[in-house]
Amino acid sequence: MLHVAHIQEQPDGHVVIHVQGKGGKVRQVPVILGQEATVLSLVQGRNEEEKVFPHISSHLDIHAYRRQYAQTLYRELSGLPLPPSAGRLPRGILDEQAILAVSRAIGHNRRDVVLTYYLR
Image (tube, rainbow, N blue to C red; front, side, top):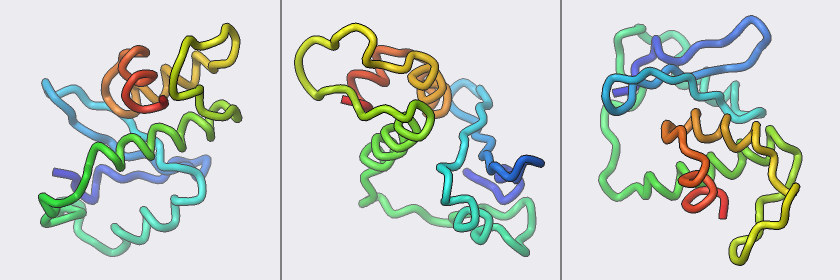
């Protein structure tokens, strides 16, 4: 359901994608740094009402791509490595602002979901 008009380049050069998720909630999803040109090339010269991807294969592992995006965005925003995959998290090793930003970007808006299913 992603249309060409949903992908926008900001004045500062960043690219965001406007996504309408469950319940009609709209969120802005930032494009990973270094991927802006690739994303913009997908929509260059196309009609704004046109779907970016007319068909998506049912064989794609969408959750794996979302996890990879979340991990990359967290590292980009925080400058920190991913938290350890098991055990208790030591105090002070997480960037809480980056976790919240990732949570908003992927549409969960819940810290625990991001930590449990996407970053660890």
